Length: 231
Image (cartoon, rainbow, N blue to C red):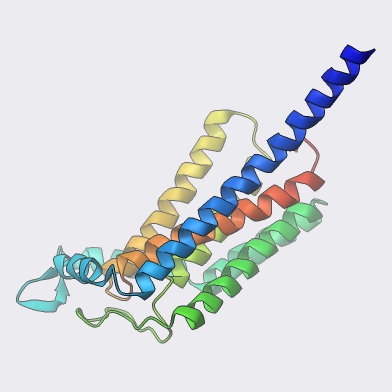
């Protein structure tokens, strides 16, 4: 009887630790991101940021990006996929499908991922108040602060959430891996487009990627507790 009680306590302790470890890792990641944002705010990364942007432009004309003209066109197209209008449309249509399919928890998760990512991004922009890059010419119009990249952060939060929900309907590991590869490629390209177009420093985008992903993973850790083990 005593041995059975000890085994039960051991299983309970492992279950608690298993649930606590992901949240502890998220807190560590959040602390690292905060330290990174302080470094950026103090200007420690500015020289590297500017050098990277200049490396993507012709030395004799900072308004002219490297590569053929079609690359600029492609980057403008990709950057639009990270805009709030596109993300809102994709998210709302998916939420509608989930509600029709009687999947309210997944629908609410998508809503939290998008809205929370957008609100967090704008709050951080107001807090950091980092000016946009001025060492190269902007190839698209911008109007708010630079840090973090809203396109990088909100697209990471939203497309990652969409990938997580999509995998709820898939069984094969290869299918799930494919979904995450596509989502990661899209998130990465959107962020890189903001750098190529000269409207964000690399650290703006890097922070946005990390913060958006962190927000969605944290949200998922909470929401998955209300879902059945299988779709």
